[in-house]
Length: 253
Image (cartoon, rainbow, N blue to C red; front, side):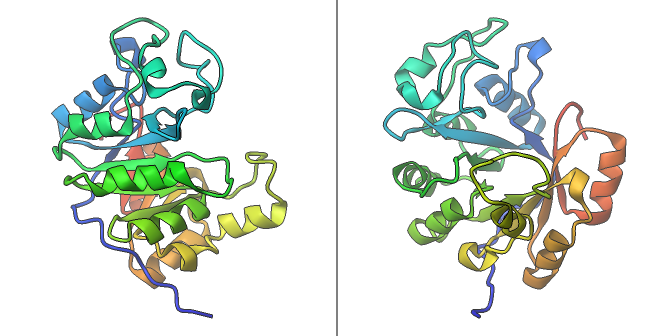
């Protein structure tokens, strides 16, 4: 078996990372919006965000596959062009719109580190993941890509090996991604595909620490362990014991 290697270093000093930006819907800052990112930048926080594939495989900054939870619209994100998505209104009003990945990175312009989660349905990766990597490769600020989907990150390693990449996981003890067999859940839980990804870091569910796999891989590869999503004082205390940085929400560290 080939030795597992680590990917390129993050290149910035780790600190608290705002989950989906420093969002607060009551203050007009929905998750994954330019206003949530602006708030994080103003406070000097790195932030995490999500990208989905719009029509034509162009990455847009949005968490869900469907629009209905957040937008005054319904249906899959993948069925609409970036221009169509940008015209949709968020529930609760305001001037926010769904940005493309390129637009979001232009907004940040290197002011704070950005961690971009690539959302997939664990299908064979292709044009969407490649497009994310292409856009990330042209960005000169501190940035990393990560995904639950090891195949997506293996493709990032191939097409953009210099970009820091992370593996996200948890105990896989629910029914998320039911199309995958339980044997695959176990491999994902145990970060068994680290040899294919060569991760720069790990991001693991705070409620599942101290799971052995992320702690062992962190030590083996000497890479950072991030933990998500930290919301309570109890979770902060656990993160201080096991992790190198928190991805936080609902408070400011």
